[in-house]
Image (cartoon, rainbow, N blue to C red):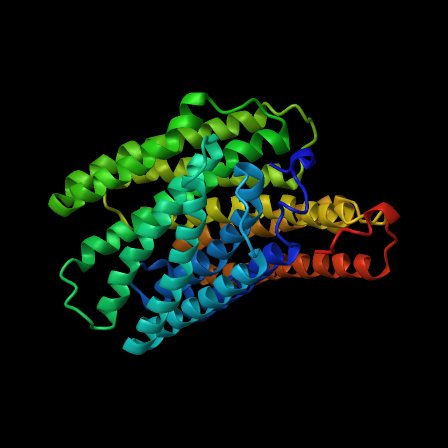
Length: 430
């Protein structure tokens, strides 16, 4: 993915695009930690306002911001898709996304119709614009890799989940009766979790796991056909949900199996890597994939046995999966971009990647993250442990925010004081 032979400043967006979205995500992560401390163990009760607020701070605030930042960076490299004027585009998306998330959280807290409408307009405008702009570029490609094809289907899922969400928010705003509210809510969750998030993560991993860790490639049957098959099956089960919710629940078991197989294959590939050294990012991947496999096994069980405790474990492990993978990519992307942009601008004093974020720093965060996941699981049985989880979440997301600010400060300091090769002086700084 980050092969410098195929990457240039003309292709890559300004570093501020990615850093800005990442920092926005980290700040929303801090807000989610505050929500956990405020609402306590009720955040594990899916019917509570605290759970809705925390879930959307993590998914729409933290995860969405990081995923959009990753897309801005990866589309030019993986698919050769160049987005014109990336900085103003990303700033507009970031502003509308932030306004939408804050409005939605305030709406859940106050049950105010106007805020639900404001959230509908802001989130609908920003996310549908992302899905249309990026998806339109990908559709026009003459040929696709496994990663670019997966990203396209992830963007299709993003568009559908936003449209479904607009039905829900306008129902909350009492603009219509919401006859299909329960069904649409279930479909919204399906396309958010098993469409957008899962498809984007697996499509990116097809490229990055092999490249970062020098592993054997994924089986072609999985890499070529997973994304279209998963998306098609989501559509089929969505239609089935309209007629028979029980049948649709059983049909989802096949999807759980596919994701479980993907998780097992990823764990196997990580054990076959040719680089013997194990850094923190490998363990982030292992925690994420282990959480995914167990989550899918529990979802298969939950299809037949409806147990509230099992459902809470599923929620925590799915959060562990998403956060672990995002953090593993974060610790690869931020140091690389800092070094790459400065090096490409001709600064021979550009800091090396380990000088931007030292591997020992990532390892310390790994322990914080592991303790956070463990405390969340413990809080299912011992509710007071949720406050330990909230404190660890504050530390974890604060750690991420600090690393972004540190990398940006190092980047700007090098631009201001660093020495450049004369032959590179004609390059515009990013």
